[in-house]
Amino acid sequence: KQEVTQIPAALSVPEGENLVLNCSFTDSAIYNLQWFRQDPGKGLTSLLLIQSSQREQTSGRLNASLDKSSGRSTLYIAASQPGDSATYLCAVLETSGSRLTFGEGTQLTVNP
Amino acid sequence: DADVTQTPRNRITKTGKRIMLECSQTKGHDRMYWYRQDPGLGLRLIYYSFDVKDINKGEISDGYSVSRQAQAKFSLSLESAIPNQTALYFCATSDPGLAGGQYNEQFFGPGTRLTVL
Image (cartoon, rainbow over all chains, first blue to last red):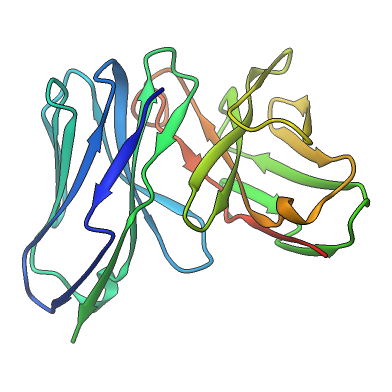
């Protein structure tokens, strides 16, 4: 059974700092990996998706990397802003394309 | 307008009542999913459907049923609600092809907060 772990569970940083969120998964046979953002009481917004054959994806100040063989992904946020405060979720899709397994998330607070 | 909508957004009900949560999407995706989110447990898959005639159980389907009325509509029912079904419920869609995004990227609705007393 696939298990996804995110470290740290919570992170508080001053505005402007670069930061890294970590995600690890136990079964490397994945179809893709997706990073989401969730604001309190709200839905999930897809940030980046990395196919299993890719090594990284970038969108604006966000960069996600994938090392499938070691079961790890990182989400790099450059020049953090208070508006980046949210919970960030990592999820892996199994090879059948049916089951998305989520980590419990990293709660990020960016202080002005 | 939102691509994936859920109704109701909030619902309070009593133990034993039948509840239906509805999901509609305008993304034209064939694949639809229902998840629940609980503090400390993350999001877990309840049911998924790859097309109108395809329904599959997910990780935690006991106590739930679904109906895929059309490509754009996927409903989740709690036949007899119980307090431990209190949670935030999400509907999601995806497309296995490149149209509209990358392979199997999942897009989520805003969620339904369900409280069972």
